[in-house]
Length: 131
Image 1 (cartoon, rainbow, N blue to C red):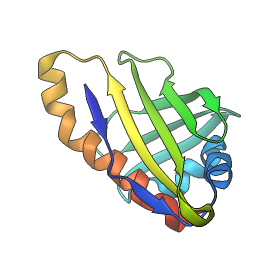
Image 2 (cartoon, one colour; image 1 turned 135 degrees about the vertical axis):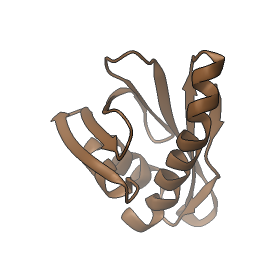
Image 3 (tube, rainbow, N blue to C red; image 1 turned 90 degrees about the horizontal axis):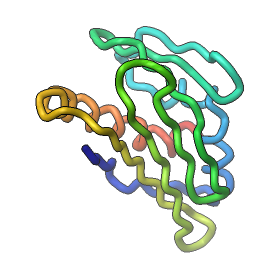
């Protein structure tokens, strides 16, 4: 399964956006309102839970400054990645798009497609306000 957020314009340089997304503590400010738990587990790992959903642990897996950051599932039964793609636009601004990739059976994919799409859209649209 492959889902993408809308492309979001941010009036910061790609390096500033990359630095913000590289610090996992900053993800708390991007979370939707229905978050029930957020906890930093390590310098590159955090746990979060949305109401009615199981806890998810994300770990920074890859960082290619200033254009890409990859967070992946750390443990648990599901294997997926959340990828932040950062592209420089005119006048030192950036365009950010979040991508969710995961290998799920068709039934699971059907159940989580809507909530995950909404989740990554919320994360992406929160970036300009949070930085």
